[in-house]
Amino acid sequence: MIRYLLALFLLPAIAFGQVDLRQDGGIQIIESGQAISLGDGIKFTVPNYDSDAQIYFATAGVTDPVAKKQISDFAKGVKALGLWNNMVCWMLRSSQNAGTGTTAYSLGGLGTYNGTIVNGPSWGADGMGFVSASSQYITLLEMLSDGDSFSMFVVGKYANSSAANLTLLSNGSGTIPRGVLLGASGNSVTTPRNISWDKVGSYSGSPVMGSATDNLWFTSASASNASNITFYQNNVSLGGFSGDYRMSGNTGPNPAIGAWQNNISSLTSYFNGSISMAAVFKIALSGSQFTAINILYKSTIGTGLSLP
Image (tube, rainbow, N blue to C red):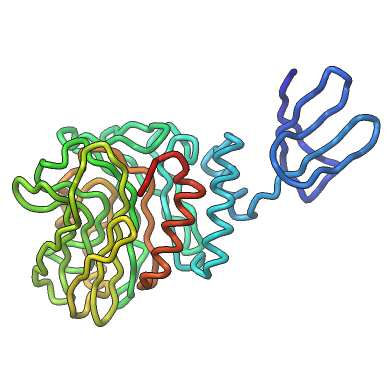
């Protein structure tokens, strides 16, 4: 059986489809979707991909049919939840992004915020591998404005959870206060923790997130608004703090995956392990919305990670 990539000029609504050329001369697209018969043994099965996902495939160079369906289903799910225009995310599994090079392409209705990969973290089938000793991270463009409520969601696993100061996803600093760090903080920390700063820059403590087990995937999340900040791990609320935790000091350092840019000129607290996906929402998500995102992630782009 010979496989081709065929431009379907007879079906203007479809850009491309993966096809099989059978020995009997018939042609059949093997990706899932509606089956269309054109006679003479020719049968097309049309992929029903989300339109924004199709643009992402072309931009990031995604070609794997399984990954394309997972990404499309995730995009459709986020839209069904009414969160598309408030979300931007970075999928770091190699088949779900470029899989090579120094750009981590973004997906989401909030806008295009492609990340720049620094110091060579490695693309992998389940996520991008970061080595803290090599100062590896992804720097992101700022997607929030002063006064915005926001949420962060990240999927990762530790290579050495007993190390100090490991950042999964950060947006802000203590020098120019404007956000949240998700990860482990402090010396000889043996449990993953969250730290944050309020609108005036005071340190707000480190709520314990639960046991950190090396090489097990988990989700970490936070929701910040004018009244409080709430943290989550593996879809369980960990509580938080009262106060104004909206974005502030927007002229400060950029957000980052795998590191904390604690001031405009330097980074610290590099991650040691793997990160599969990170997302920012320009809205403070509720507990039920985080539950929906967790369920959607695990059934689409997070398939196979054995998340709890």
